[in-house]
Image 1 (tube, rainbow, N blue to C red):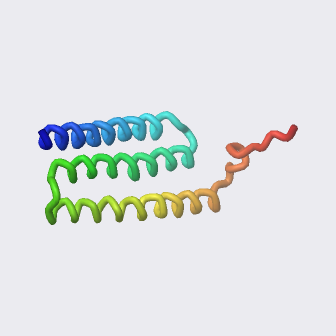
Image 2 (cartoon, rainbow, N blue to C red):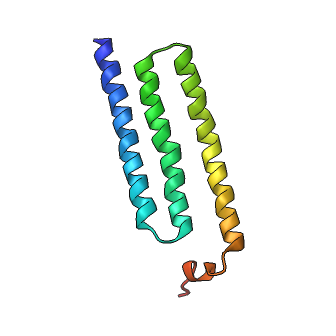
Length: 107
């Protein structure tokens, strides 16, 4: 019985990761502006890979391999948002047409 619960939970996390990757791909190709694309790519990296790796951890069970996969998830959880934030800051500093995308409507 416990094997079926592990199988269902692992499959659910893997399917969630696939759905998040699909949303990421749609968002990267849908949006025109680079900051919107960067947001979707960072979202997919952080949550998609995290969900997929958690599914693999559940399938693997409690062993040294699952501990290493957990550390990979932890590393990606911290490094992906930081790196995408740095790339976004570079885009904001070097963009010449940024004012077109950030119009503020006054009431």
